[in-house]
Amino acid sequence: MDAHDKKSVSNPDDASLIEAVPSLERGEIGNEKLTLKDVDPALTLTGGEIIEYTLEEEMSVLSKIDWNIIPLMCWIYAIQFADKITLNYASLMGIRHDTHLNPNSQQYSWASSIFYAGYILWEFPTTYLLRHLPIAKYASANIIIWGTILACHAAVSNWGGLMTVRFLLGVFEATVTPAFVIITSIWYKQNEQGRRMGYWLCCNGVSLILMAVIGYGLSAIDGPVLASWRILFLILGLLTIATGAFSMWHMPDNASTARFLNKRQKAIAAERIRGNFQGIGNRVWKWNQFREAFRDPRTYLYVLFSLMMNIPNGGITTFGSLIVNSFGFNARLSLLLGAPSGIFDIGGKLFFTWLSDKLMDRSLPAFLAIMFPMVGGILMVILPLTSQAGLLIGYYMISVSGASWGLIMIMISNNTIGYTKKATVNGLQILAYGAGNWIGPQTFRSHEAPDYPSGKLMVAIMYGVSSGILLVIRFINWRENRRRDRLRSESGTAEDTAEIQRAKFMDLTDFEQPHFRYIL
Image (tube, rainbow, N blue to C red; front, side, top):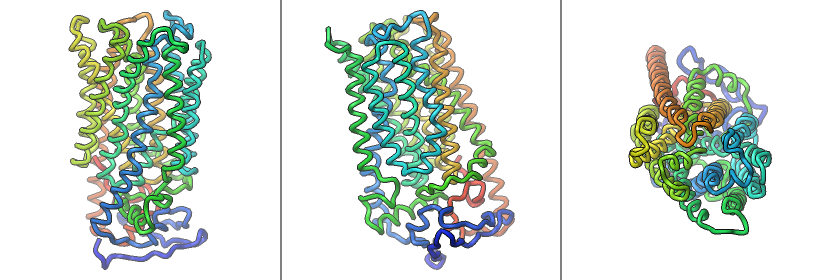
């Protein structure tokens, strides 16, 4: 924006009204009266002005944000995934025997699925709390609690105890992914979010590699005082508690509370993201935005995609080591052979999120990424057990699926505007994630062990359906952008005014900001 377009806005008291903006029918913003509590804190942080800054200043601020936020997010996401998949590795380390699970029943499958029952139960309450509480502090408290519950896994001795701790683990892990999506969106521009989200998402792959090596090493312990799977839960639980405590101290809730930024740098951090059509996070729950989320067709497509692609994910996460074992490898080697799947996971997330930011396109890279697990599922179905190399490659290709899911979360972050609406849509999508992962283990039937043909077939089918949903999302966004372009042309409001720039920090939704364009 040119300097002569710069316009100051007074900082009103809570009871004061902010000047209304023009009507939606003319291709602009709805004519509403807003108080300070309705707008985003970024409006106050910038002093109600368009902040001018140099490229050098912006790069300095961005570097500080990167080094203070991203490494901690990466570590937390790595450890939460390690905590989540520990049951998979413990399955070949004696937990099924020590907790007296019936090998001819679905008890092991239910021990995995119940995690996502807790996830589903708590998703909407945590979505509401994420909106009302300091986001970093609330997420950190959840990390400490789930670390404590994970350590308690070491004490279980029967199916009932295992079901209880798994359910509670799901409850408190339900917060981290929606929190991280929101945190990424309040610190980074749209064209920066893909790579940054890719950094912390790919730490799932780091966990896959490390857990495979740790599981392989612990499984070699002969006659320990504690079973190796109990040691694994204790180590990870205590590490998670320490991580949560450090996050509570270090992670800022937004730019206004960042100790590593001075006053001007905080204003620049807020100004940088004005083009996102959102600010740094308003804590007022807006029921009109909540209702709008359910009127947006994209919401249902995001939910359907997340459900379909996470059904196979739930099965693979729980039965991965057993699937590799079914290819003809012994139990210890099967643990170690899980490591390369982490390399595929890391590579897919880093490459496709980089490509997405470079093209400023979310759905096309997501579509390309989902093709890999679909082909991998087909290979596991059609290849004979004698083709061990081909079966392993098919299994590893499934790990690329996380890149596609990550890009959908980035799309929600970019295209769902309005803090309450974003939190609602993201919560619904995570709810579907939990439901898919709950259903997934049930597609691997105990009477089909060790080959699990039905489970492998569902992998290929569900990823194929997910690819079709991505194409529908792309079409809807393309059509809406064309409609908005036409309305803007007809209204004669081709240039962004200072009033439109100010509206970007008023916590309005994408429906209420017709100058906003959806990223494909």
